[in-house]
Amino acid sequence: AQRVTQPEKLLSVFKGAPVELKCNYSYSGSPELFWYVQYSRQRLQLLLRHISRESIKGFTADLNKGETSFHLKKPFAQEEDSAMYYCALHLGGSGNTPLVFGKGTRLSVIA
Amino acid sequence: DSGVTQTPKHLITATGQRVTLRCSPRSGDLSVYWYQQSLDQGLQFLIQYYNGEERAKGNILERFSAQQFPDLHSELNLSSLELGDSALYFCASSTLGAGNTIYFGEGSWLTVV
Image (cartoon, rainbow over all chains, first blue to last red; front, side, top):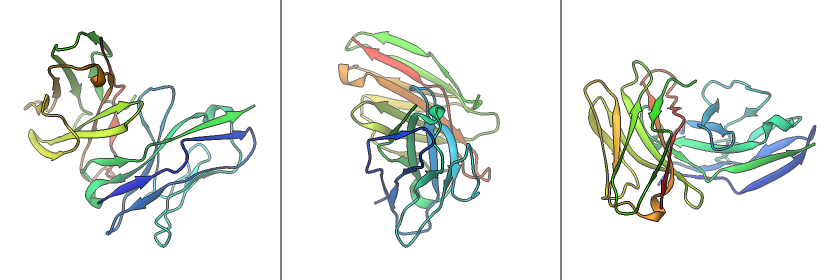
């Protein structure tokens, strides 16, 4: 079964410190992975998708198939980064299928 | 703005009642998804429709049902409501070939009292 694990419910860092939000997945095929961000119970916004290898708001994430991980990183945290972050995997591994979400990690950036 | 529109934004209703949540997907998107977000369960996938037909089913209760209409908008019907159904209900849409990205609406806050 496909599964996404975000081991940390809450992560607190100081402004300017590096951030790493962990995500591990369980999927037997080729995964399609995403990071979504949610500010104050608003809608989920796409942050990153592994297929495009882009960097948004200074965040990057690399798919490590050997470790089945897709950790989200940012070298210098900003206060406006405080939000809920969800790692997600396409059910069935392909597009036009539902996303399975991890439980989320709340990032709190302290001034 | 993701282009996915949900109504109502907020809804308060009593236990045992029935409500309908409405979603208009992004222009051109054929797939609509419904998710439930609660404090204790996180984001739970409920159901997906593709071009009017049910495509995938998740943790949707029998008291809940959904449909997608010919104009591609979707409705989620919640009946015999219980206190535990209080949650934020998200609709999302996607289209094949657009990077497989799913775009979310603002959500409908349901409070059952």
